[in-house]
Image 1 (cartoon, rainbow, N blue to C red):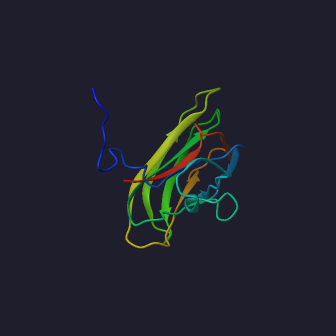
Image 2: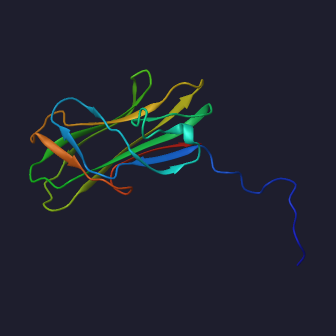
Image 3: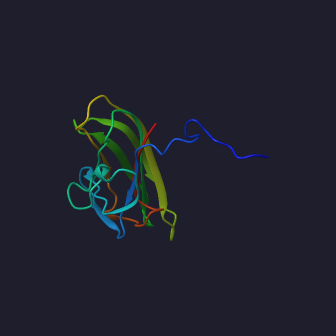
Length: 158
């Protein structure tokens, strides 16, 4: 019934996290994996984690530790089945999260696909990037839908 006081904060501030996306659709050709650049930011608890001007394809941790890294693409509707590959790479160009899948032929609907992985950063200076490709393309180019709920990339310190 009285006022409460706490010796420490009962809830810690949010960990380092970023959620980035694009405002316009992205065209991806049928060749090798393409790195996706993200030019909009929905969440950024530390402004040094992402830049829309310099290296917009990177998310860069600002403290050491373990991070959950997730990427999603929303493929605009196509009438041909296709194989897609989603990969998350670290700054040494090593993939640590993969998803290879068959895109269905649902007409008139976009399909969302995700990939996620854990990455430990023992030293600062590294980063992660998100790649998308069509390893056995049945179509020459696909369009990835835009917007915060469609094609995005995120990193959260655990």
